[in-house]
Amino acid sequence: MIFEVFRQERKGQAFQHAGSIEAADERFAEAYAREQYGRRGESVALWVVERGSIMRIEEFVDELNRNYHRVDGYPLKEKLKEARERAGTAAPRDR
Amino acid sequence: MEQREREFLEYVQGGGQVEATDWMPDEYRARLRKFVEMHGNSELMGVLPEREWILRAPTLQRKLALTAKVQDEVGHAQLIYRVVEDLGKSREECLDELISGKSKFHNVFHYPTKTWGDVGVIAWLVDAAAIISQKALLKCSYAPYARIMKKICWEESFHILHGRDVVLTLMNGTDDQRGLVQEALDRWWGPLMQFHGNPIPADEDPMVVWRIKSQGNDEARQQFLDGYVPQIWELGLTVPDPELRKDEESGRWLYTEPDWDELRAVVTGHGPKSEDRLDLRRKARENSAWVRSVLLAA
Image (cartoon, rainbow over all chains, first blue to last red; front, side, top):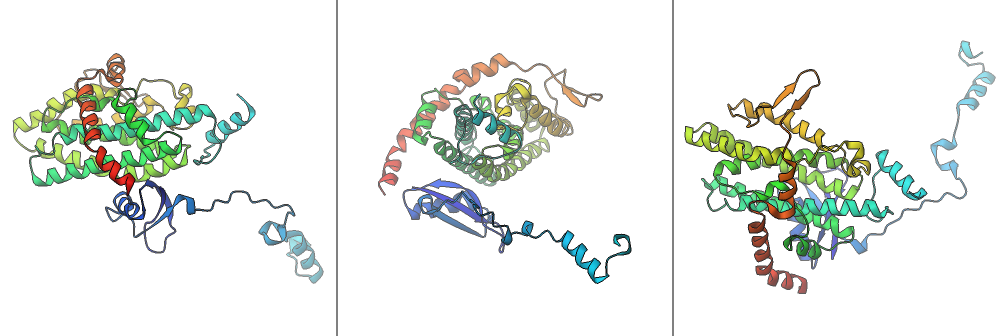
């Protein structure tokens, strides 16, 4: 079985993919992961996951171009300029 | 070159990285696999010259350090062969081809270690030359390989310190001990200068074109000379090359042309220790066969 190993370098940091190991079962996977990625105190935690258990998602299709939930869906510059003019608060150079 | 392949080439040349499950051109996969496999072979064969000194180490501390280093290098081989497996070649196949003499490993592991001085020079300078190549692989276009290189480089930096410590201890010792280091340096200089390969221009090197390597061979050698010749000289050691000097104008090191015929002969299995080391690897594989079969049955 192939296991993917993710390691956390310091508490609070994100786990990062470090590499993979081949092991007959979970007990051996633990031993190998400890030897490869924890022997010198370089990690505070490891996640060891059998490769087949990882769901992989790669396609992110946005058919409807849903820009209302993204920051680029809100170009405020022109609208703010008009609103300031109507309120009489525009900076002198914009008047 | 078809459109898809051209796009891939542009992508990696622009700094893009590829994962194991991504599409890749056949040529890229084949070159990458061969390169990574040779790296794995070298890690595995690289422990043998030092292994010879575990029983003869001068102190317990040195014995422990050598043992730990051997464990590190074998660990690197395991990680690297995993990368090869994901590229479509099993570890068993790699090992079969290694012991049959079909595949290659680095030139420096085909030479004998005559004295403890050799152990110091190998751990210091061979590892220094290797870490220059390996650091350049941190930027490899194949991401799974680049990621394991982080751990490998980190451990190699210990090895260089260990080697330098061995060399400094000898250089602070008796005349005989200092002599051991100079003799070892004389023996290793040729192979060290050949280590980074013939000076093929980076833009003609397919490994650089595909961004598997990020630097050309001669660039790596220049970096090695820049970093380590001053450290060698400051200890009062002599580099056995009368032509060696840094050209102040170009900032580049000048040296006697390394013996490329020797390099070719050695990496194709005709080095002084090629046969012995492969033989030892063969026996180790036979002797450990029962362990592998028990593990696989677990």
